[in-house]
Length: 337
Image (cartoon, rainbow, N blue to C red; front, top):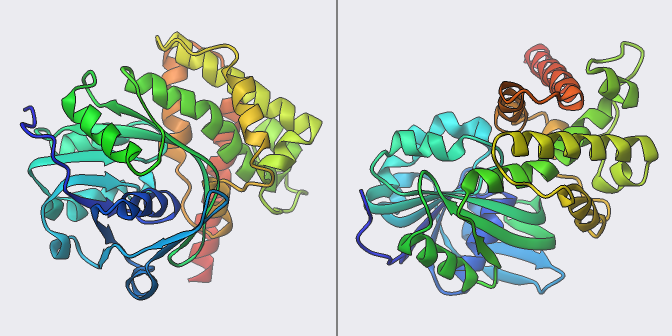
């Protein structure tokens, strides 16, 4: 069913970590009526607002803070920025926010997030946004914007339309560059070219190079710190793994019908060098003992690549090692309990 209006007056942000907090704050800065659905950061945001610390200029905003979706009510646009590991909660969190004129935009990493929203709300328009940005949440309500920020926007299950343009215009009004893509799945695979090596190897680096090469933990190798982007790009063997993983992802995307540029990997590596020592979201989750986004970021892309007949030895080994590391995290949590 087509939405019959392009007004986007009231906005809810569900998942207010680094990504949701930053883009929600940018929209709030323009005067939009933005509501943050919060848990652990509620008190900090209610008292001090959201504080963005950026080389492009610091700013503070004061969105409406809520503990429950019922406090917010129906919205024109719902932005979902939860980790995909929390998608099982969407059926509980979103219905009080979604009415007959509500559009949904997911800024989550990986594959299948738009399909999850579309299954929950089959008559609502669903959009995906790939965020090419370097961010960290440094403490409750405080976000460090390091570099970049562009969003590539597409409509799930259809071509860009008037509502797509309205959402792009809204985001651009906050100073965020937006590219509208006619092929949302291709845009996802373009971002996976970055996400898989830097998020995956960042975690795998804690197990060491030998474990990463063979795809399983090495008993004599202790678990160390995760690797930031500079450690991956300034060390020959690790940089080679980054390159090989990018090549596998590009080959997989092309085999699935997405015309990815052969030079995309080099472009992504060059863009990453300006980030200096950036620890991406998956290594941060691992170091905090949180679940890894294995399905959306790694297993689903691997499954699609294998179905398309692409040989992916590096991605296969990486998935196996990440699963083993995540199982160890679960066991450690059970033992601690």
